[in-house]
Length: 122
Image: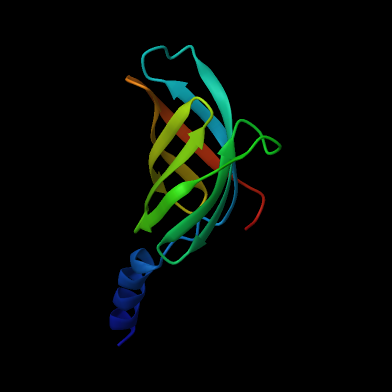
């Protein structure tokens, strides 16, 4: 019986949804020029499969996100800026978010890798 309970506990843990709500801080690195790295700060709010919030270079300079979705550990959303749109395709754990972002300006696309850590407690 004890073995059965342990087995159920180990199976249930991966099924638990990660709540990414909170503040996240990190950097992005340009794929074409790895010397180019800039800060990123995001404020996220998750409600089931919906994701809202904002992102920018600092907590004081934020741009609202659109089309935010959470599917398992995958986060997808867009942030329109005055110079185009940034598309995000990320994977989340409890305290880290990593993935790719694409900045689209007209017919030009710049790719970068993004890495964020949770700031404080949620």
